[in-house]
Image (tube, rainbow, N blue to C red; front, top):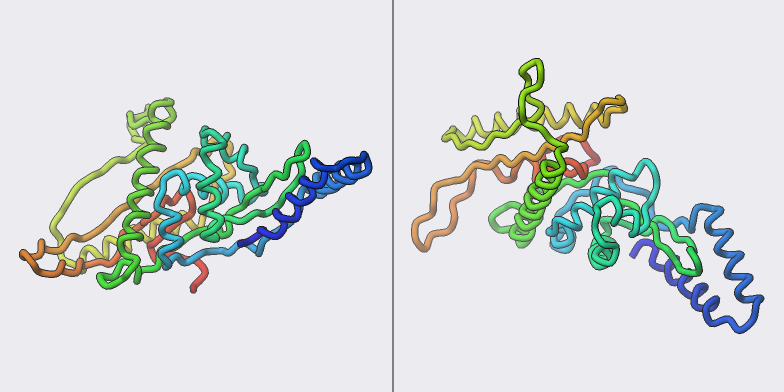
Length: 278
């Protein structure tokens, strides 16, 4: 597990400081604390991946929870400013710190986040976490009818849907979103829910058109304009084949995966766009 040895070493130091029977041990612990904090903590863990390709059940299970997705999103967003402690993640999510520990450990065990540093704070080892990758991509083959991880993949998608629903409700309740028209008559938001019957090739063409939009946004990157706003784009596109007859196996659908299976806020994508190839 990334950073595990560094944590164990730090805990041993703290234990020695707490159980020290003389001032010299305490002085050494305080000196270590000052040295660690002056250096910004103990560096640990491998370099951050540009993109991670998700294809195993353990990682998918770690992603199948809205709160864990939110934690991962916070750490991905903070990749340019440095690692965060659990209390900082809790503050960003407006969640109790104690509620996050189990989820943080699950993400760390799956290799989605890592301990990027440790420091002593008032005699207690504080781990600082960073995302282990800049973006995620769900492997197309995990959605195939004979894939053993197919159910886990859909559970991760459902968790993403739950998270987007919760985030939208919170933002709308706080008055941060507005679907009314502005002075020019334009709408700042877009909501559309519809079903059409189309030929399989039209479905694939539509998927390609949406992927092109995602590629354009990905190439532009985050805006540094003073009036920039946080935009959430969640896309789910799928073709449902005919219902199977009683006792028959489900028929394959025209497309193998949704246009975007995880929230783009976290840099997650399953649209075949740019990224490090596996």
